Image 1 (tube, helix red, strand yellow):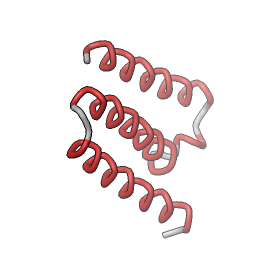
Image 2 (spheres, helix red, strand yellow; image 1 turned 135 degrees about the vertical axis):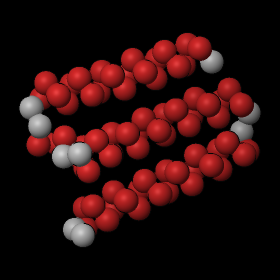
Image 3 (cartoon, rainbow, N blue to C red; image 1 turned 60 degrees about the vertical axis):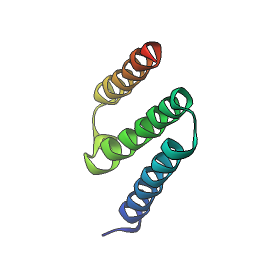
Image 4 (tube, rainbow, N blue to C red; image 1 turned 30 degrees about the vertical axis):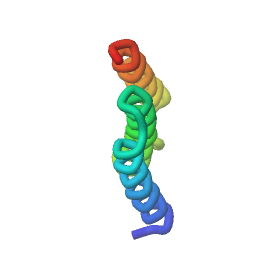
Length: 79
């Protein structure tokens, strides 16, 4: 495994642990928002690193990021 993939994997694990800690110690609405943001960051890491989206056409990068923004916006409005 390359160092870049290892760093990404460690970052994903840290973000997951941070999400668990936030869910235990913060108010429900605030925790939901922060966990949603952390999940979006994890989604970006996974899609760009492990799905090799960083080598894809800019159209696909834009579509993925717009999907993420719309998803977070819809969920944030429902909170």
